[in-house]
Amino acid sequence: MQKLKLGWMYKFLVTLFLIMIVLLTNTVYSRSGRFGSLLGEMLIVGSALLSILSIILLYRAKINILKSIQLFGCEIIVIMGLLGSNLIKGTFSLSLIMKLVVFPLLCFPIIHVFLVSGEPMYPLKSLRIVIEWIMGISTIIYFLSLFISLPSIITVSYAWGTSQTANGILGMQFFTQGSTQFLGMTVLRNTGIFTEAPMSGFVCSLALLILLFIEKKSIFSFSSIVLIICGLTTTSTTVLTVIIFAVFLKLYTSRFKRYTVLIAVALIPIIFIAIESIWASKVAANSGSVDVRFDDLYAGVKTWIVHPILGWGWSNEDAYLPYISPERLNFYGNSGFSSGIFFVLITGGLVEFFFYYIVPYFEFAKISLDNMFFILILLYIFLISIALNSYYIIMFLNQFCLMYAIYNKNTVKIEKEILSMTGEANRPLHV
Image (cartoon, rainbow, N blue to C red; front, side, top):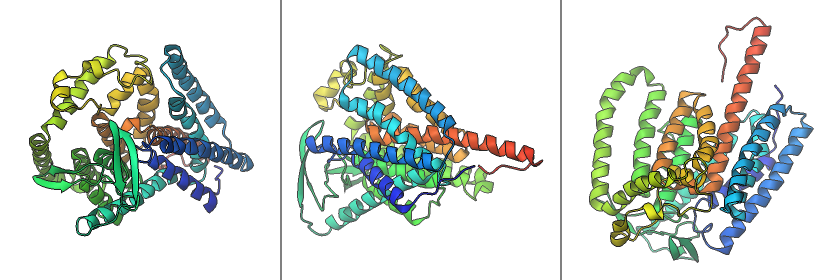
């Protein structure tokens, strides 16, 4: 099979592309009015230029892209169908069209270049490194600020629920939330450059999952320890449970697999006790947050079943409001939504959820046990957090999962044909 050799300049441009994606993942910068819009416009223009460069590279290397063209055509049909539905309803905006229609298509040739270069996992590995550096620097500043006074050199006004202002230390740590009760202690939340701790926790969790299950690194590696520390300092209960699940499942797939039964017997009770303690602590310290999460799931179901197939429309993000508990507004004043999966079902219905999420994730999960664990934990995060409104990073991830699964399937098929032609059909394949 033809391999495309990539130079450092192309990889550098892709890294800048990934940095932009992370900066647009509900950071204070991406939510700061005109500057946030400018970041989005820069990403779309940069993606278009990188996409054109990728097509040129594929053409000059004489790579066979017939299968990719077929997949690209199928994607266009699905995306245009969803776009048509929203145009008819009038539930669209130029910004949403860029995020949900244009951007996924622009990612196609960029990802394809890496799939045929012999470095198919490079985009996810680079995304993990970008997140690790951003959160690592933010966390160093977080710990330093606990002991010494650090000057704030930037002030950013941003919209997150309401209009807010945050002072940034070196532009990398904004402390957008104060302290909270976590495991029986009052702890300052590490929000980094993000609008809230759960968002910084989400990107940490994603990077950790990529490291453990995609790159297949040890839980005792330096990067794993860094990401776990960064995640814990967000004091997010979701992150803590993700770390517990990830570590347990990593042990299951590691070189300790022969001791699976022993490990399970020893760890499962500990895991359940830990989760129960975490949950009890969460309920005692933040009962409002717990009530809101359950109310969001209930409201999500009630809202979705009104328009289950095509949803309420992309711009009808507040369609759930009539279905939330009035007491919640009276006591907690919180009308925000916290379930990413139901957010997609409400706005895009089963059609969007099936083609944008289920198909890519199911195909990707079928490849290996590590991939399956990666997807299962990711879906758990999406169920109880609003990460899915971080369109760019999610669309990039979904597109990668789908394209990698198709590429892997075609590669295995070709290898089988080659082995059958050489009389080695019984030789095991390396996937």
